Image (tube, rainbow, N blue to C red; front, side, top):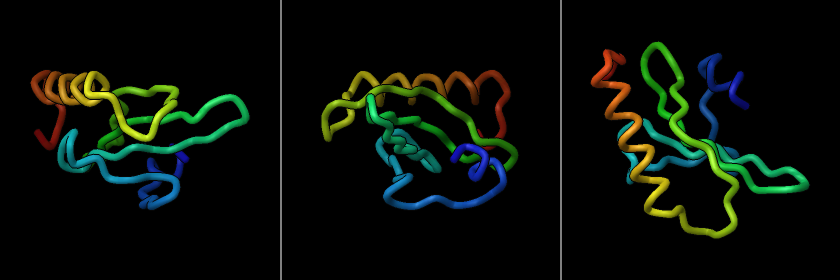
Length: 85
């Protein structure tokens, strides 16, 4: 699924959903395997797909600490010279 994103494909539900709580262009990639429900939090910039955080999710709601971590990492990425700041 990450390769599809890198190729410029837009993924929708059930594979990906917007995460406006984190920021503009931020999404949650949803991957289910036999052992866990994985969530990869990413942002689509003009020149890259930036991965901020991933978790094994056990509840419906995304924990505030995970949302805050993503916000912090994207902020640091932009501060360090990432595009689309």
